[in-house]
Image (cartoon, rainbow, N blue to C red; front, side, top):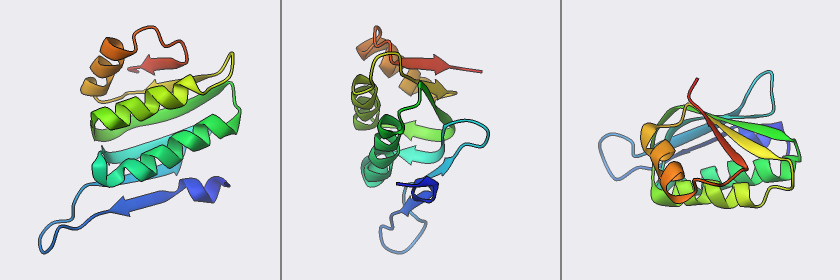
Length: 122
């Protein structure tokens, strides 16, 4: 999967009216990783899974997930992140930059000792 495959968009519609939840994932500039924007939930879970699978396959020691524009992450999305981190090889880690506060709390509560996830609030 090339860098083009990371530029992924998904939007769901629930009939007339405003669009449903969406998630956009794009490559980060200047370092290995992606920037996500929108919501990580049932309607966008496949996009999130693809982004995490790409992170696992990349083979980089550090892979960045910029989440400052993510407004919501459901429990399944947090679990998918923890599962992907668990599949990383020795010495590798995911650096989660500026996640929503609820994701930070869920990670601290359910996966406090997972050494392959580093949460950065700056």
